[in-house]
Length: 160
Image (cartoon, one colour):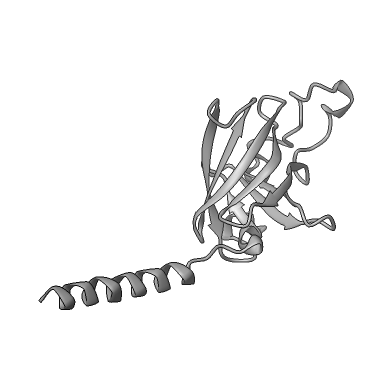
């Protein structure tokens, strides 16, 4: 009886580990288009020549709905940059994959506040990305969740 229980436990453990191996996160799993938590922007995460990951703002709700002629980087601490559009702006950069399930040592620029924060990212699953911006240590920060855009050109990004 005891041997059967031990055998069952090892069998379940074996299959559990096998299932986890199928969910291994790879460095490039983060690539693609991500809709922000507020659903007001889409960030295209790409891999640079230096093998670090960065994101570029490729869609902004106000620009494409006609509610604003253009969303400018008006909160930027550098006055010379306040007249540039945030569309096309690189707002995340410097991330490297830690070999497990996080991208670390990055930065994020928030065009709403004009502030830049240290940041890290983690995939909750293949289609949910947690991005944590912080000052100093991650404990003192804020997490936002982005959702993967599966289509190459989402409906709300298409010109009507």
